[in-house]
Image (cartoon, rainbow, N blue to C red):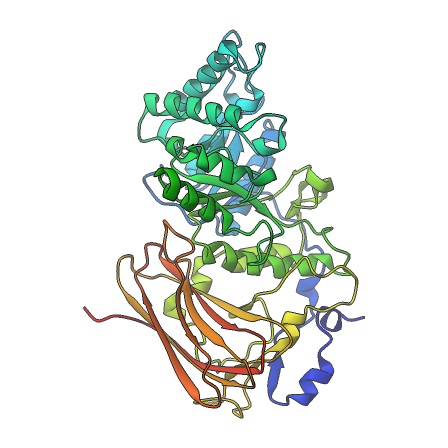
Length: 514
């Protein structure tokens, strides 16, 4: 079966809606082959001013795993070049195989020093995992263990200081056989030692395996005061980034808001320090293509929930799930897994979404892909068998026949059968300036409802959605809302409850005149 038919199988639907483009119809082509040509060895690193945490990097970084080939200069420089090619502004590395597991063991910082020098020369930043879990623990998290942790933290902080964008203490402790009290104590030790070296150094909370955490650990830690000991609340998210996921990105905010309301603990910006999708998650005859679709939805969803930064997992050498999180294979000439690699390079470039380029608010530009431009929200975990399309893609069409348009010829049509959502990321907003978001919708059928939403714009509350709803039918209704961003972006949401039909047109975003 051809890739186009595999993704959606909407030929009959398209015939019934002449002039409309069902959004799931991919154009097949050579770029969608599982892997592309090998990447050549990188040129010498270009000169660039070093970054510190006071210079905000791009939103996205990536896990490079230089630590696994710490003495391989070609690997180090190649993945740095690929990081820049992907429009990402920093990498995540770790204090790994450098010694210093206890106060009697000296450090050998050689590979990490070389890595930091090459990153600085390339204009890239670094997030550093201190890996307190590697410290020797001879007395069951007693005074000797604490002394070893303080030694490791202080040594790393004094050596690299503000060259590090932020530090992270303990990776996914909710999956370890430790209790909440120990995790919180470790966090407070790292916080006190780091701030004693330099109060300006930034610390992430020990990132949990999901925004909820195993056994609701995120809620427990926030209720116990975790945000007193971090500058960012940290978590990981793999696969389940859709709104209805049990591990939805919203939980990092809900947990903080609950703790703030009950105990007055501070609310921190949220960072996503691992974020990826393995291609064996579901049975699908072209899993690389499915993964590319997920990557584009993921970019919008992470910003829809107002996260501060995100780190892709993984560029190469991840051993998790047999290496199926990786974007390139260094053992095959740095072969890129396509179309996933190109999906990241395009969708994770903020220029792709710049307000200066427009956002097709009148739907006049043809759109045939559900994950480019206006992104159709779907559940990527629902696909459990081959040749099964996503129902969300079947119910949403971007049309250019003029029959359902308010003005011009373009419009978006949503049909019944389930909740429909489309999202559009718009970058390049001015912080602190108020914007007006408007859209026109025409509902038909009993029980039909729709809403316009401005989402993800608030750095300190990713759930601060500004919404304008309607249930009026059989006429065009203007929906309007305003927001003042503390992030330089907004995610526009057009939602339909799945009853009857909704036609959308003429979406505009304008700054309020001063």
